[in-house]
Length: 146
Image (cartoon, rainbow, N blue to C red; front, side, top):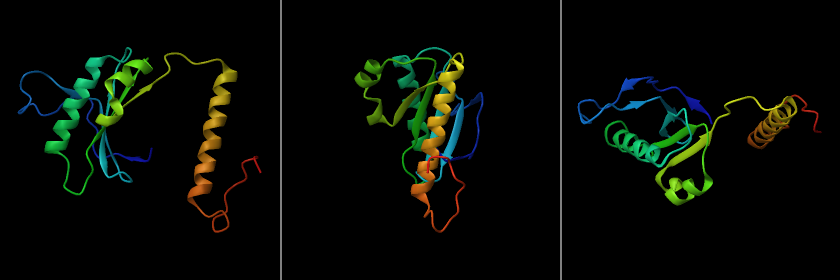
């Protein structure tokens, strides 16, 4: 994701004048130039819970009402958690609400697995670069795949 830091709230209360029935904190807020929208990121220390969706929906609706400019798309949310259930995500229909869930690693995988994942990510990045730019017009370093 090509994110440009618009503003970065860590532990900063959002909408304290409007949402006065509790304390609400957003962990990270970015602006995606290509998508022309705010991206709210909520970091959770445990596994994904259905309540996380409700909290993110509240954030997204608040940003949509008070922060979004007319030329921008509706904000989207990303919940980063230690684990998730594909069935819960499917049942909650998160894709329709502009909310996405991703897992982070709580411990490093074995070195061989880590190397495989890194090499796969590098390969995908090179393919995306090659698709984006005309290889003849721009000299890219060789990747070893050619």
